[in-house]
Image 1: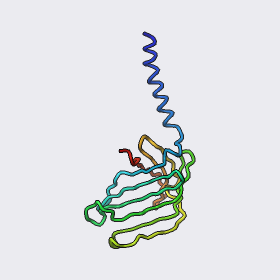
Image 2: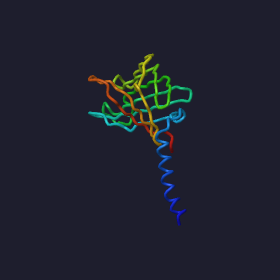
Image 3: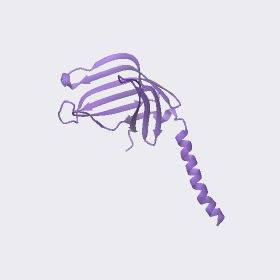
Image 4: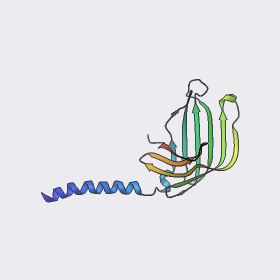
Length: 162
């Protein structure tokens, strides 16, 4: 009878230890590689926005923000976008994303209007740290609205799970 009780007691303890170890381990660089998508956000007075973030094994990233239905319409077509690309470096849970190209397009100027491309050298997601929780990427970083630095969190879900 005692061995059975010992096993019943030991299994939850081992599982709790495994969970706490996995929560505190530093993310591996391969965990971030791939595509990520944010939940659709409702914009005011109309429209919505989605964010896409991808990381390659070679150290490059792409970050795209698409807006839909901001000028009325059906809301399923992209009304405007910003596409940022560059390189990233990971050190433990720290993430530095250095953009070198920003492309923007807005249907306000007509469906056939050209995108604007800028060569830049800037950091996005300032002072970013990240966590991967199951199929979710959580970025904690600093934004700078008019009244000072603000801790900000963005959450993404891994693409290609079907």
